[in-house]
Image (tube, rainbow, N blue to C red; front, side, top):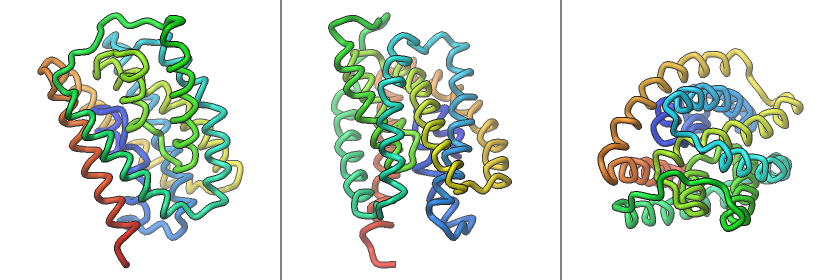
Length: 244
């Protein structure tokens, strides 16, 4: 499930993996669930990035600058995330996701600018949005794809298929930074991470194929992206706000 989501929309990794580990598998410590999931998700994101790059849809110049800008933010965010109880902030994050989903649906007919390249005009937006998404990614222990995809589209105007593919560079980079922080603190269940990686590789192959199929239908991938965000955001709100 996690690998398929990463391959299809470039996001949903840890946001799906953490609740699955806590509520389905039964990992007792939320920080261990986050640390384990980010190891698995980062590995799966790198595998899906390889699949997308073979299709020629990754815009490397933009993706690398965006990712580098987010590394410091991811380090800062992961440090804060280990110190704070993020339940209320998770609820706020879910609300932000719902707003993003509505914007994605509103602009679903927009094709995007093909052949986008990094320039002096879009460089400040790429760096600024990269740093911001990196901080949020590290704080919540997520790969950040649900934020990175719309951020890349906003910064450069690229089509969603290019944003999904390019986002995996940042998801992998942010994930490595956060994963190193959690592994250093001993908050990773390695056998569980290995099993998640194996399943994620299979799911990622299917998700990448599905993304390529949807990208040729105008607005279809935007709608799927928004639908996944809405479902996950509502689940997060239910878990954080409703009494257990």
